[in-house]
Image 1 (tube, chains in turn blue, yellow):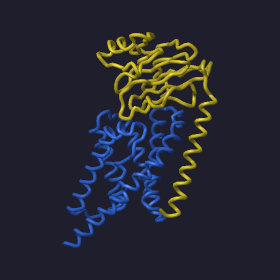
Image 2: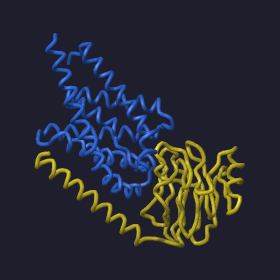
Image 3: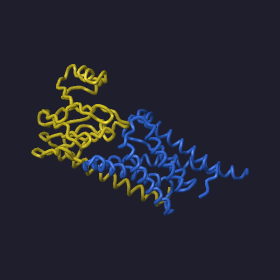
Image 4: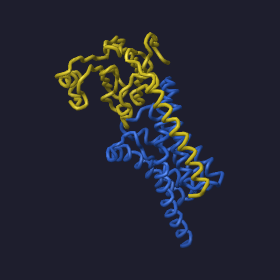
Length: 175
Length: 162
């Protein structure tokens, strides 16, 4: 796939946005909602947008780079949090890609599937890393929380993807 | 949303809620006031707490126990160079401080149950897991690599889980 300058710049901006969203969400939103266990997954909005506006390969690159860079930049990150983020991110990406590929679902349920399997991936990795199978009993709570957060991030991604697609079309028109 | 979306989200919702109610019911039915809370750090057993009376068996050099109720803040703060735990968080009970990857993890024993009341992590999930005396409700502080498992009466704790 050819990466022209415009495409690279767009990807770099979206990657930067996803990193900032991830860190801001950690620091601000949890305190604001008063529900620290609930994370909206705003950074995943960017992966969804790239999946719909650009390509699955670009979305994968943004996802992996975001996880790597946030692990290096965010306060309180450890090897364990990196592994959890990686497992959750890869599981979410696989679910979103598979759902999108069927062509039967809108971006909202693709987002919900991503949030749902993000929780599954994280808990499976936690069971492996901590060698404690009882951790699986936390999973249902995270699965239940993933549905409303997935719907919300899906709605945000839908609106934002439409705007970005419009912008890209207008740039091409001006050339 | 399309019909397919509603079906998919509906299925995922049913799966999540069914699992949630099943686990909650299991946790309520398997509570042991006379069990043992086994605390692990980096897979190694560092502390055992008898849930019957809060008596402890310390397996690590860097585990701290504060039995006091009044003045517990002073003790904890003095022990950790000014790291204070609010009186609201501390409350009554018996306190145990074990090492975590991000700093000390404070555990409170009260009414035959244990809970994590203070630790450093991005989401503080283990502080919000509440109290437990059920083997099906372990407390896990992932970034700190601290796990609290509840053992049934008579069940032996493993010295290492890895």
